[in-house]
Each structure stands twice: as structure tokens, then as C-alpha cells.
Image 1 (cartoon, rainbow, N blue to C red):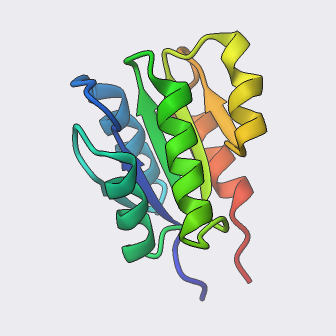
Image 2 (image 1 turned 180 degrees about the horizontal axis):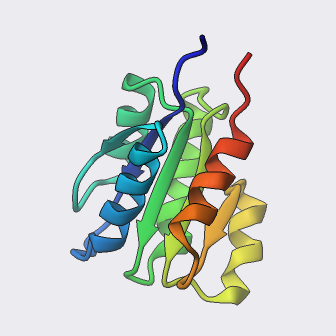
Amino acid sequence: MSAPIRVVVAKPGLDGHDRGAKVVARALRDAGIEVVYTGLHQTPAQIVDAAIQEDADIIGLSVLSGAHLTLFAEVMDLLKDKDATDIIVFGGGIIPEDDIPLLEQMGVAKIFTPGTTTHEIVQWVQDHITRD
């Protein structure tokens, strides 16, 4: 039997609204995925360190503050610096459609916009982690 998928769900920056992140974390957990929720006000460095320490397959970032381009870029750069680019990054929140291609160019695998169901997120995570 293979190890369960491990996801770090994080709220980077100063945004204090974490209901969506908690709903996603619970949906992932209920689907049998191991979830580490880092809590509010995490720096990109704290998030990347947690993902490496927890041997995470994926990082899920929830950003509502408008600082998504900066925060995602920092996480992607730190993963590269720490030779951890095998960790997939996805995100969600209030992110303008025009910014999604920019995030994808940075290497962010997927952005979920408001209205996405938890089922869609769980299915995407399960589809993007392959286990032998």
C-alpha cells in the first residue's frame, strides 16, 4: 500500500481570513489525504520549510490579500533554492483571471477561483499525485 498524499495548506502574508483554507483542508482530509495546516500569517520561508519538513507532495496557498503575485513568486523561488521543485504548488482565493497565466509561468500548477467546489479541488490533487 502506498503512502497517502501529503498536502501543506498555508495562508501566506497578512491576510487573516482562513475559512476557505480550513474548508479545503477538511475536504482533503476527509478524502484520505494527509493535511498539515500551517495557520495564519505564514511567511513564504515558513511555508516552504514546513513542506520540506513534512515531506509534502503539494503546497496549497490561500491568498485573499491581493499580494498573490509576490507571495507565490517567493514560494516558487524558495522551492527552487532548496532543491524542492518536486513539490507541486496550487492556490486559490481572490485572484484576478488576468494574473493566472503569470502564476502558471512561475510554475504554479493550478489556481482555483471562487466558486470552485471542494470536490473539484480534491479530485485535482488526487489526479496530480501518482503513487506506485
